[in-house]
Image 1 (cartoon, one colour):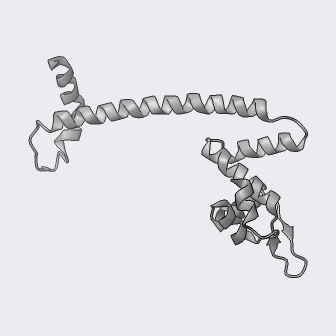
Image 2 (tube, rainbow, N blue to C red; image 1 turned 60 degrees about the horizontal axis):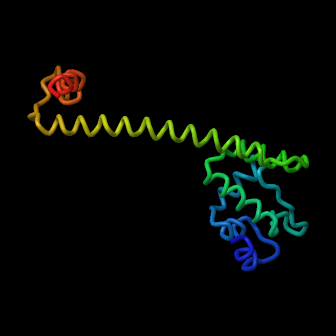
Image 3 (cartoon, rainbow, N blue to C red; image 1 turned 180 degrees about the horizontal axis):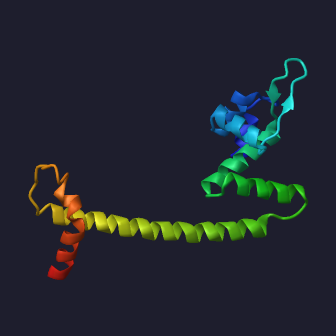
Length: 155
């Protein structure tokens, strides 16, 4: 994909050209410039930032890494290791293994939450509506712990 998109672009691009070629917004490019993930040359005639094909490759690398769950700080550390002549691959594998474990834990938490929601809905569908009376807003939520406990003992 990098070769295809690089062949469709001018050798030197401005922020908007680079963003369009990489499928991101110009604000994304500017943000990456501000935090140091990207570095731009300046056109001596007008002081505009200008980018080459290597910038597009770096931007696509960042986009791929973000899609895999890497933080911008982790991506910067990957770049730093590569620029120091060290292979970042062992660290990338370790980071991804950590991200996988964290994501699996979040999925389990979300599944438990979804199960609680389904249980609440099943219980609440059998309960009548009630009007707020100044002491109560919605008896379904206010009595959830009690109705949930009763449902568990009834099963």
